[in-house]
Length: 298
Image (cartoon, rainbow, N blue to C red; front, side, top):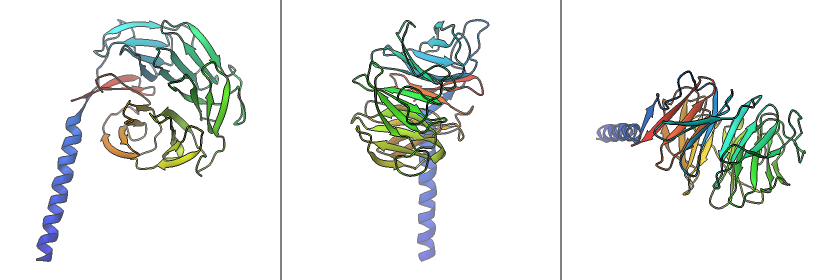
C-alpha cells in the first residue's frame, strides 16, 4: 500500500510539473522577426532598449546612428545620434521622457531631451574614477531615475558600487564601493532599479544575486533564487513585478516579492537589454548576436 501511495504521489507531482510547464509556455511567445527597419539598415550591436511614456521603443546601438525608435507593432519611426560611443551600454527613459545612457568604456552618463538634445553629462569622458570618486566612473553599466529626479548609476564593470546623484547631477552618496561577496559588497553591479517603496534593487551579476537596500543605502536582503547569474537587464513595473534577463541562460525571470514566479526560456541570442511596453509585452536586445526580439504576452 505504501508503494502504491508513493507512486500516486510521484505521478501527481509529474503531472503538476508538466501542467506548470505548459502554462509557462502558453503565457509568452517569442517573435524572432520583430521590427521593420529601413532598406539597407541592420540592428547592429543593439545593447539596450527602453520605452517612452508614449509607448515607443528606443534601441541604443553600438554603431551610428546610435538610436533607433520603433512603435510596438515594429514599424520604424526614426533614427538619430551621429556621434559614436566607444561602448554604448545602458539606456533608460524616465517618466518625463528624458533619455539617459551610459558609455561603459568612456565612463560617462548622458541625459538627452526626447528630441535628442544633449542636456547633461556626468562623469569625465575617457577618465576613470575609483570607488571613492564623486564625479568619475569606471565601467558604468546602467542608470535609473527615481520619481523625484535623483538618478542612480550602477558603476560596476571595474568599480563595485551604485552612485546616487540629485536631478541636477550633484553627488549624494555611494552604495557599496567594495568588491566582495558580503552584504552590500558587489562583483559587477550590472543593473539598478527602484521599487514603489524607494528600495534600491541591484543586480549583483558575478555574485549570482540581487541585493536590496533601503532608500538610505542600508542593506536589507538578497535574492538568489535564479536559474543563472542576473547579468543582463532589469525592468520593474508599477506593481513591483521585476523582470530579469539572464545572458548565459538565454532566459528571463519574473520576480515578485523576491521570488521567481515565472521563467521565460529559449529566448536565445544572449539577451542583454530588456524593456516592456504598456501591454506587458517584452522587448529584448542582443549586442553579440545582433538583433532585437519581441516576446508577446498572450
